[in-house]
Image (cartoon, rainbow, N blue to C red; front, side, top):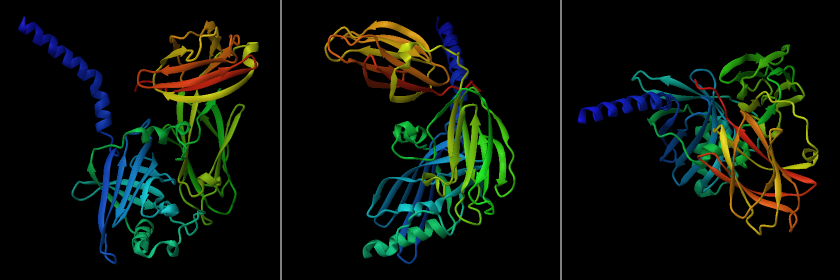
Length: 433
């Protein structure tokens, strides 16, 4: 009996190892994730300083949310930012380093001095280090703090930190494998869940996977250089925008695609003002370093969702004015909807349309939650709530909770015979590797 039990136990261990080992190896082997640190001393102030960079595990091996901590004397600043993989051993550094906390003063736009890339190098002692390669500019197009505006008690420290970020060689050593985690990671990766901008555009839903792109520039003699990657692969090598650039064809994968537009330099007239023009059938949009929020940026990220969908004839109810009430991201292919009336059960009836097809029609909303399962398509899923009536107490109201196994999110639904509600669910689908 004991021998049989041991055999079964060993078999279970082997099965679990096969199921979970590839995931663990992938996480443990990421060469960027973890904490990197550099320490030194400002001789003029005789103050120690520390720069620490905590990098998360990446989304799709490309987008690395990170936390930057700078401390010296009485100053402590904590910032969140996005790093994007650029080639095999480089991480492009996002322009916006959003302060979580700064005391007793703010570095303001001085953090733009850290723009450029981190290159992963191996020292003679076989240690891995991140070396900062700045994109230097005489003019960043941003309002910089003036030293004269700092209090006398902190002006020296502020100047030393500014000079450190702007001029000094920075080399961060691997401290530990503690990756950046928490809600900050989701806020960086999902623009809809954050008030701050980290260089990622709002997600774009496309009806075709075939498109074209080309470049343009506000200054044709500037020698701005740009490049483009799609899903981690170089789509367009560094290109001088002062030269003629023909249309480039681009083919998207099914599901989410990550397209990154890189500024490789700031040209002769800083900063880079290159534009990437994209055309996917009826969808046309532009990624531009000339836009205010992307001036002096090193990259712009676009998440492009494509999935072939049936051409459904719209029902008259779907032609009503439709208001987007919220959105969420999920990695689950199926979610549950819980629907109930949190006020008085007054005979409200609704219909639910998912991606052009009716999930239910004439669904009575009760005081107790009722559950429906929805299978999602990769990319953007549109769930439209249509009022069948106004009940005894207009308008037609209910509570919707979406459950995907790991998260729950509630919404207030308020519809009538002229207005629908829409919830967008972004299903981050990609085939198993």
